[in-house]
Length: 383
Image 1 (cartoon, helix red, strand yellow):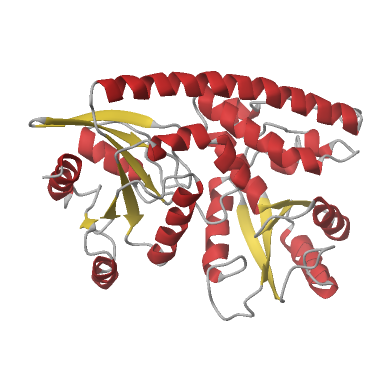
Image 2 (cartoon, rainbow, N blue to C red):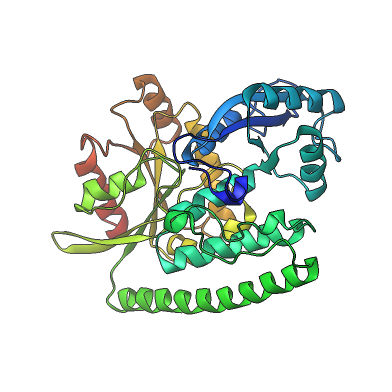
């Protein structure tokens, strides 16, 4: 079920998935592309909503040069959105993009239901999937960074700070009563963020000590990176016999899983890391920087690609952009084309032509895994 951070406390039932309507501004005037409002972006937003336990009933898209600064959509399209929301009995509107506080407020007044943006949706999913103390701290820091500029006097935006659906819906952060004044709310959140940053710093130091021990023992490190749901955890399981969680949902893995592989004379570690997505909220990149350092500090980044994805090339570009953003752009990369068992052969051929050093493989069937192990050994030893 969707977190009450999105819907407000008491808005969900035990038997029915809440209904949502998507809304987007397509700035390319229908010329294609993968930006907000494109078919690719909207399909991904639907998948995100499904991962968060929502049922998407409709989508309203407007072609215009840029979003309206007051209401995101033009006035006529806002009326169309209100009608679509009423027709679907929707409890939530999700915008494909990041909305300003004013746009959220104005849209809610016109549409009559809660309005959130893509960033809030992703944050809610991260809150659900964080399992370790470090993951929960990082998610809550990201939520506070998102919430602070969006606090409102009615207290609604404080109904689930640190929200999501962790621990049976109890949340991982603080709850703020609606009666608190805005300045008190802001001070409470800032104090909470300060404590969380101290906790995050200690957890990061522990992770650094672990890295230091591996470095002293001269154990090479491989980080598994890639787009969300590319099959990174499944590939780790296939290579190491690990039991990392595998789900057909977005962002199933947030907390790094480290496993050791020994092949003859070579021993190295493989670390599964969080997947990326288009328009990944900068709050999450900042909050998860210590975790993403696993990629930055690794000897080799194994970039797993879902070869069956219609937009595999776009996903590769997105991952490269995030890697550069976190300072990992110079880490040597090995591209692995996963899911070749279900990918159309012509798609795999096109990817292989574009990336001739890539290794085709299937975590499900084991095809290509032996070649992947041999390639990793060559890349790590330089032989």
